[in-house]
Image (tube, rainbow over all chains, first blue to last red; front, side):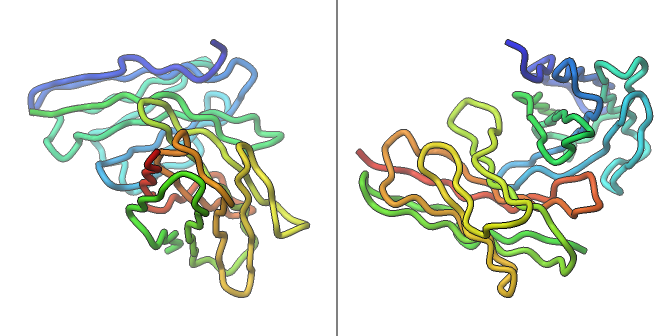
Length: 114
Length: 113
């Protein structure tokens, strides 16, 4: 399967703990996006990278959230001191900047904060 | 702020019925428009997209959508649905000079056999 992959698929944590998610984009794609989807809503943009540079961050991305893409390939999204309101599906997407409008989505990581 | 509205949260149909899902957006500039579908247990997949040109675009699985600029709308249609079309459908907008998709709230479609 050469699509976007995300790990883990599910994460249950206690409030106050830190969690980290990983996204592996389609190999030839240089753009990588993170979105968050809560129950009954559409995905909301969090941040995106072109290669290793983080070029845009949403106001939704509080100081407790940090994303990296150190080598321009896979990306990690870390949430520190998780809160119950962080419970959501975290989606990763990738695209090729030559056709930036075609974003391919991964299966998501479902986070539950108890 | 830009927003995308999908008029129906839930739609229930019988097989062979026609489907139309509404989508309106609130951005006055040039946009690219998308419909994504999420089948049960699967990830978001692109159904169709509009960039420019013919405002009637055809996608996979017999779906089509019409861009009406004057109404800021991009409604999705299928003349005859199948049970396998049961899914959640999301409209999304990308500003021509932007990088992030703005999604509507989604419409859950249930097709009864």
